[in-house]
Amino acid sequence: MVSKSQKEHEASCRLVFLQRPHGAPRGLLMHYALYKIAQRPSHGYELLQDIESRTEGAWRPGAGSIYPMLKKMVDERLITDEPSGKGKVDHRTYHITKKGLEHVRMAKGFFANFGQRWGSMRRIFIEMLEPQDVGKFLVDGSKTQFQIAQEAVESKMGDLAPSDARFILKEYALNLERQLDWANSTLNKVGEERIRPVQTIRKTKERLSK
Image (cartoon, rainbow, N blue to C red):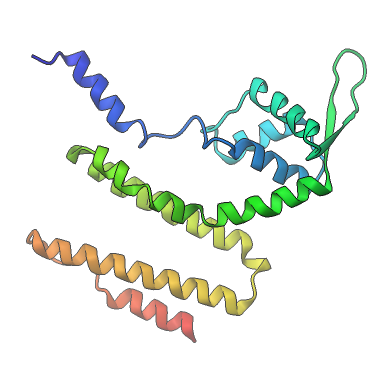
């Protein structure tokens, strides 16, 4: 007979990837730190504060992670360090190098295709997903995906040409329409009425095309 504590442990294991992450993909810390230093010279503590603030505390790399990594990047000549502390505390300001800028440029290409790379792993996560967790996975996942899409477009809107912005939003509207078509079709299969007419998104798409 399975004990209550064992059941709770199994449930915890199933939901571990559905909860807020306290870590991040390997290598992301280095890429992000390099990206921020390329924008302006920074202290290690500033980088830690920035990450915690932007992730609302979900990702909190410690000093034991950031400073050895910064030293390694100095050794690899991706950045340079400039001592700026007085007294016992040695604050260092980090500056990007030409080699570091090239690394940032290459990393941007990798992260631009991150969604596709993540999508290729979906069957592994679906295989591990229990039926009782599908609701949380679907609802929370779709909310997060929408928030990412919205923030990505709005934060870069000023740097996008109007024609590019229109194309992106049209493609996104088409994807939403396909998702809604699937959801309504599946609702029909389980004997439920449509929750929202597809024409609503079609009208939105037509308005964006003008």
